[in-house]
Amino acid sequence: MLACPRVTPTFTSGYRSRFSCRAEDQQTQNSTGLIVQNKKKKKKVLVVGSGWAGLGAAYHLCKQGFDVTVLEGGYDSGLTRLSSSPDDFGIRGFWYPYRNIFNLVDELGIKPFTNWIKSAQYSGEGLEVEFPIFQDLPQWPTPFGTLFYTEFARLPLVDRLTSLPLMAAVVDFDNTDTSWRKYDASKSNWSFSDIPWGLPSLDEILLFQQCEFHFVVTARELFRQFRCSERLFENVLDPLLQVGLFAPAERCSAAATLGMLYYFVLAHQWVCSTGIYRFQFYGWQQKDFDLVWCRGTVREKIFEPWMDSMRNQGCKFLEGRRVTDFYFDEETGRISEVICGKESLKADAVILAVGISTLQEIIQNSAALCTREEFLKVLNLSSIDLLCVRLKFDKKVNIPFASNACSGIDNSNGWTFFDLNTIYNEHKDDPETVIQADFFHANELLPLKDEDVVAKAMSCLSKCIKDFEDATVIDKEIARFPKSLTHFFPGSYKSMMRGSTSFPNLFMAGDWIITRHGSWSQEKSFVTGLEAANRVVDYLEEGTFARIIPVEEDEPHIQALRSLNRNLNEIIAQLPWSNYFIQ
Image (cartoon, rainbow, N blue to C red):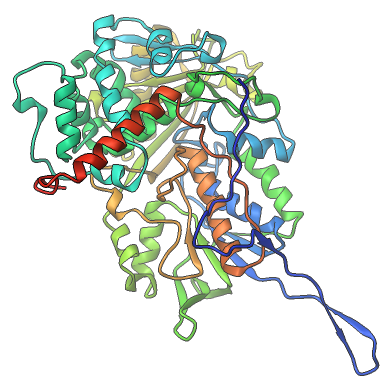
């Protein structure tokens, strides 16, 4: 059965009915009767931030003929050779469902990615999981393909099967505002552990649905309530969260956990990508955990050619600009200028595409933003420290998998390491091994001296691959990115921002901005940038909306279960005692 992707505008209601309009040159007649061509002045759009979100917004707005300026604040990472931006780090792979990013690179005519590669997961005891290239294997319905094809080195089948009850929460979580508030609750009033049984029965799961108990506080609590085994949690689930949400399970929102796990591991129904990543359509989908890697830094292989294409369309990039405030025009109720120290830049519309910590700094210095509750709530949010280490060894070390996720030191932080000889073009022919290691939740590691950081990294690498014990580091590069990654902690959802703000011409984008698209990480950042561009197009009433490829639909059995779940909740909501319990 064939299918095709649905390509839709970002907005479906509440916006101007016409899909597009474009400012045309106007003709007037002078006193001599001659026709004079009057070019309409381009409207100015300022984009603050030059990551996936900021560049995504600027790219589309350039194509619509706006006068676009991107403000690059710069990062003080203590590193000059690795990268000038943390966009090269965090989650570094590009997963199968990143359809909008794959579409972008095809449009740019570049080929920055490797082929699909296998990955692995390690614990302190050694290799735990081997992830195959799922698209090369026969297809199974969610979650059976992921469950059966993933190769567990030491986890018994009985432990793996304890993950199945978690599907009840996956079905219940549908990325709506209601689901996020339910699973991101910061209070607990009841627990499955109060009942003396093992795995929850169907009746008991239905009781959970009926009563709408907001007992789920953390990801760890979510796994405990649904009776995941201790070994499954310690060796598989917790390490996955430490590299996917950058923090241990007890510090991660259950809502973010369900959203991330479903997007990367369990979803979806139909396959569709573009260019060299186009494949046949299949009835079942287990491929979303397949990934490719950039053959060099993201900035070098993707951002630089992308920015060059924007410069050719008139886009300006101003480096070293730190936004300190905004000028609020009380007559119009709009932001009319962006202030960068002693410099002031006029704008008809502004997009803030920055991380949480950067925005918090702006808010604290801005007299305009401090007057709005939505921005003050951002001060409740937090970010996570990142430490990046690149090591070059004196000899070749056999690394079975190019991409590896690992449980952290004393389980307080997760980390990843990558074989750059396999991934990066520049290191393919090197006679020595070059690896990159990224440490998340690295607040305990950032203060260390470089020599101590290298010693920590070597200790961790040796626990995963014994051959590193006999290798000597001959070169090192270390980057510190304090407060650079989004922390989805329990209760954070209520403080996160939407794409629109109470200022009619100020819009938001980034991986922490609330969106119903359903994507995650780099894809989410890029999509929210396109959504912000669409809001500018709608506000200024010029140009056409960006076409955003939606996340694939759920598999039929997931659709049926979610429909049943919604109908059940609607029936329960009509019962006289439905509002008795804490909502």
